[in-house]
Length: 513
Ligand code: NAD
Image 1 (tube, rainbow, N blue to C red):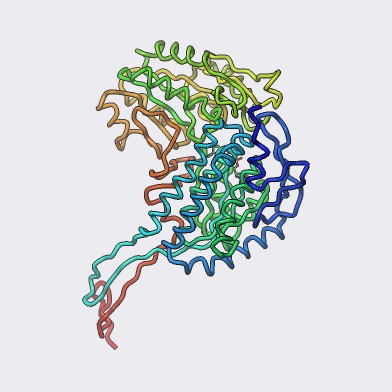
Image 2: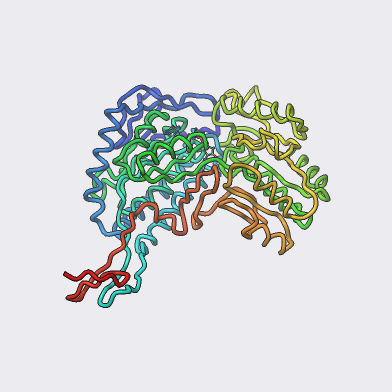
């Protein structure tokens, strides 16, 4: 079966199957109630973990705080060496971890491997960066003075992650946090707790081999209640939270209430604009992958296609034809394009969205529906659907985390399409399909897309780690991964040094005694 080799993968990652007891994991602070993890692939119980109690939480934070005292003293390039070894361990575990991601979360095996590759890539990026945590030097206005800035380790980074990227998001944060000299406490999604244990077991080996304190990486398990302990904790200077806008608004207020820093990576409502000058073939591939890849459960999934009226029917017909080719089924079987949604609650949200779009006056072009029968026993497999809609519909304004694509028609100039594209509360990813330079540049200009990510002639999903990743408006404003995203994991200090025997004041102020 396509699940073959799963037991070996779980063994390699240190996860006990359900007959073998509860998986504990290394440096995983959890002694509370049982949390069971069911696979959306076949509906079977994979394994169980224990949730963290308030006492476990306290122990985790104290362990992390203790580890920070020594870890911050290790020179950044040596911290980079730890992250390099972590990347090596991920290479050795890519097959097993990719399989677990696919089985526990439901994305295709290729995407599972891709997610682990993203972890390896951020490690490589962070290793180089560990020698480049540069500050600036400035010219002082006072004679015999020198000014410069430096970046110091921040402390404990609390990481709250979503189910849909159950391993990569953690590493985007940890790789940069660790080279920055920080220690991390991670609360993975309660929907993918085994991915958390597997990652933690991998880094724990590296920490042990280097005789470093275990608290550099701590794991706590559970739902929002344990997350709330993290966000309210004044000992945690930075909370990096990935998930829904609903969650982000709560987390942001709690962290701001204690004047902590938060890095928010929240929901998207991503669109591709298709202009009269678009390459239709590329558009269809980009749109279909963007809409149905990971069963529409990427924060960057394509949710809206804004198509010029002159080519609307052509694009629509090509899309409908392409959707007929989609194979829905077990994501561990490489022949399938679309796997399951995470759980039956997600299936309900999907079905509700399709009802809502019709109720608001939309027209279904490709019928949806929940699949049943052999191979679909988990009840989580749905048909990707397409509906014609208006951007103003309430349901179109809302991020439905499922493969539902809305087609929206525009007329006139590209400005009209940009207005529609920007006319939602979220601001994560956006794209334009055009061979017209003016349209492309207009889309990228100050009056163009208002998203954190704006692409030309590629779709909305599939970011590379070299760029800063994140979005504006209700997506939360955070940036992770490449470019200078590392700066949020450090504290900046401005230093002025006087190497004279006088004490001149700034702005020429006289203060004679
Ligand atoms: P979710 O908001 O339900 O949960 C995310 C995490 O937040 C979980 O670990 C959950 O336990 C925790 N949480 C929930 N309420 C909390 C609270 N009050 N305090 C502290 N922690 C709390 O999201 P989900 O269903 O797991 O993931 C899907 C969502 O995540 C989508 O909206 C998607 O767009 C978004 N997402 C965004 C990005 C990005 O980078 N922008 C990446 C992946 C997913």
